[in-house]
Amino acid sequence: MSFFSEIKNKEAKISVADKTFIGKNVVLGGRCKEINIGYGCFIGNDIYIDVDYLTIGDYTTIHHGSIIHGVKTQIGHNCWFGHYTIIDSLGGNTRIGNNVGVGAHSQLWSHMKFGDVLNGCRWNSSSSLTLDDDVWLVGHSIVGPIHAKEKSMLMTGGVAVKDMDSNSIYAGSPAKNVSDRFGVQFEEVAYEEKCRRFLQLRAEFCSANAIDENLFVLVDEFSSQPGVTQFNLHERAYRPIRSEAEYQFIKFMLYDKAKWLPALAT
Image 1 (spheres, helix red, strand yellow):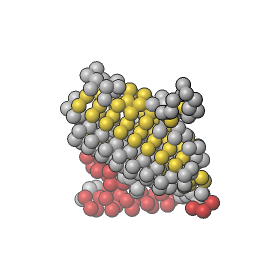
Image 2 (cartoon, one colour; image 1 turned 90 degrees about the horizontal axis):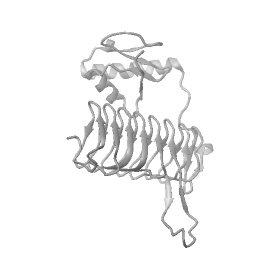
Image 3 (cartoon, helix red, strand yellow; image 1 turned 45 degrees about the horizontal axis):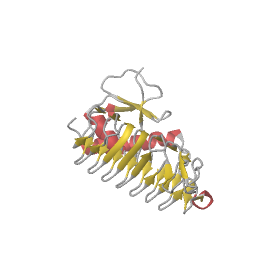
Image 4 (cartoon, rainbow, N blue to C red; image 1 turned 135 degrees about the vertical axis):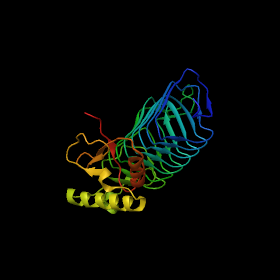
C-alpha cells in the first residue's frame, strides 16, 4: 500500500478513501490488523499507528508527530487532532465521536500502569475512553479513561480524571466544572438563524470561487437531485455526491464554520 512509508504487518487489511492525504514517514506497526481511513482526511508527517483496529471517518485531520496505539480505536467524522497528540486504546477500546477537537500536545489515555503489582503497587487499571460528539480538548490536555459527554470542553492544560458532563466546561488539574464562570460551549441557535448563516457561507464561498450557488441547497428531507449536494439543518447532515465543488465547500466550512455528517443514501 503506497500510502504508507512502512507496513510492518504485511497481512493487515488497509482501506483509504479518495481525497485523503497521507504525509511522509507514516508507519503502520506490527499490531495493525485492519485500518480504515475515510474520505477527505489529512494524516500528517511522522505519525506512528500501532493499533489492532482503527477506523477514521471522513474529513478528519491528524497532524504531524502523533501516535495512535492500542487495541481498538474508533474516530468519527470531522475530527481534528493537533501536533504530537497521543491516542491510546491499550485499555481495550477508545471511541471518539464526530466533530471532536483535540489541541496540540494532548494525551488521551485508556490505561494507567507501570508500578510493580507484585510488590504492592496499587495503581494498575485499564478501561474504555469515550469522547462523545462535539467534545473539545483545547490543547496540552490530558484525559484518562473517562467519558466526556457531548459538547463538553476541557480548557488548555486541563487534566480530566473523571467523567465530564454534557455541554459543560472544565479546567485545572484535576479538572473541575467551571461552567458557572465561563458558561457553556454551545448555545441554542434558532433554525431561521442557522439558515441565514448557511446562505451567507454559501454566498461567500461561491463568490470567491466562481461556483454556482445552486449546487448546494437546503432541504428538509433528502431526495434525488443529481449533481446537487443537499444539506439538512435539522439533521446536521448532507447527502454526499463527492464532486470537487462539494469537497471544496466542505473544506471551506471546516473546522470552525460548520461541520456536517454524511447521510446514507436511501
